[in-house]
Picture 1 (cartoon, rainbow, N blue to C red):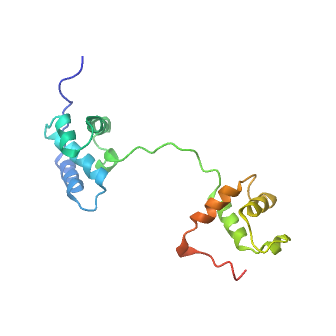
Picture 2: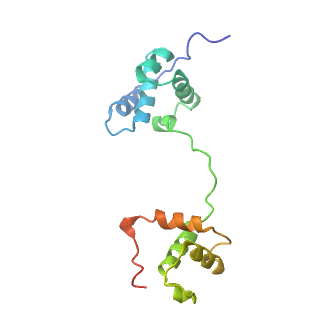
Picture 3: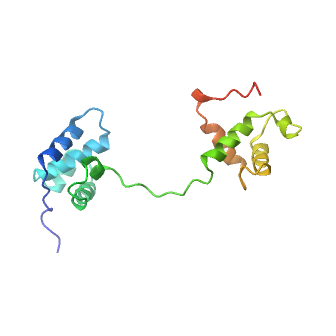
Length: 161
């Protein structure tokens, strides 16, 4: 049988102050301010559906953040209780050192590697990185992504070679 009311949330004065500050600050990310507002409204006894209607979110979202708040230990900092859980993802295929080595390779003239090229192609860079044992294997597309990600403000001048 479904419950007709949500589990009440009780806040300490310090928690309430911090939630108020987060909800009102102009520099607080919108989602974080929204979550703080959900907890404040819940502590005031506002029903889940009404909070959802006021904030323009799904009732399921309000229930999620209420449950998250209630599930964390009382001494857990407010910010930790309102932040997203880390999302799963595949581990990085290449270490930062390997990426740096490939970027450094791209700055070398191809003649230094005894290749009859005037400019590196992504495929040639990938083959040379494998030949030099920088990586076991790499696609030309991955090399292209590394080159594309390189920030323009910190570009290394490769012309001096």
